[in-house]
Length: 100
Image (cartoon, rainbow, N blue to C red):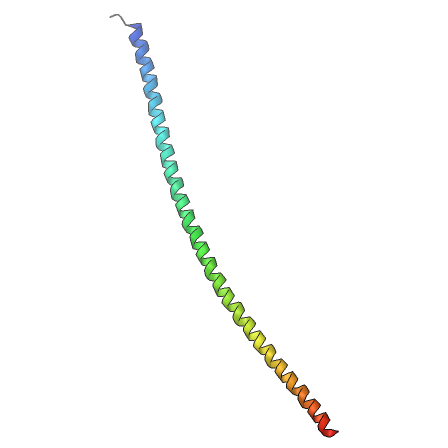
């Protein structure tokens, strides 16, 4: 049997191209899987960032309310102390005027 060198060359080249094609398909499949995984991770990260943002908003609102209550209480206490001080001073001055 006589081998045809052109056919042999063609067959080898076809096998090389076929192997290259198979490797490319495997690479594309791996890249697709990586992209899918990356997309899922980005989606999870986006959800977590939204959760953190929501929580920070809640904490901000809670903190704002707490600070307002604390300041309100402190101001009310200060106002009461000042009223008592003014009343005491007025009483002292009235008693001085009545002694004179």
